[in-house]
Image (cartoon, rainbow, N blue to C red; front, side, top):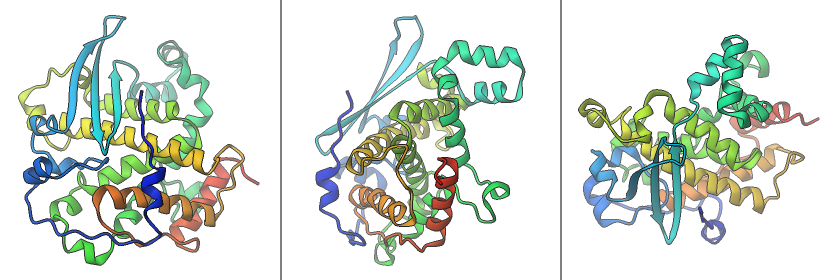
Length: 306
């Protein structure tokens, strides 16, 4: 159902390529007059109605009588679809982790796949959090990789970027953080595991996402309201599609060796997507970068490499 072919796009970019644009239009003009390239940025949308100009949002009833949000986003002739049904959230995982037998039994009943994939989900949790007690001082998580990508934006391009997109935690960083994490989860494990983690996160604080009955306060809250969550859902899908492309391109399996050289290459592939999507340049990752060395070490330990 979801189709995305990045291989042709990626081939146009060499490591460290600069693509700079000067965009003096305001955010609304950018939405209406410029083609949105894949990744969405929350700070470009001031309301749910504005987001609907680029994302098709519908609410449906599931065969079991529940509700689901059906989102569709087209970009460059490709399309991704996000379906968020009622289901388990991060709160259910936390209850199963911290509670007793009944809480774990409830999670097994409501999401048997998550119990079946518990080892992979534990690995995701470890990679998504800083664990200095386990992996040493300065241990990086997905968050730190995303911060480094943001810092890699070429100086010539920084002068042309909207300060809100750069300074807000709902700007470029949030987009990069969602997509980068989803790329890794998909490439390392599977799209279904990545989707489970993404959906559980989105359901945690805003269960209304599945049926769209938002309060006025929720609609006007651009940081934690539906606009931000729906943007995250679409970006999660683009991240999963890129993860599948890179998994196939590099034949990534459980036996893949995540050396510093391969991790730097992989991160530069992700940056090429942002280069195309945002039309800006990035300095490349290098194998001897501190964040690359430390995350490579962490990957090897988490994935059981010798």
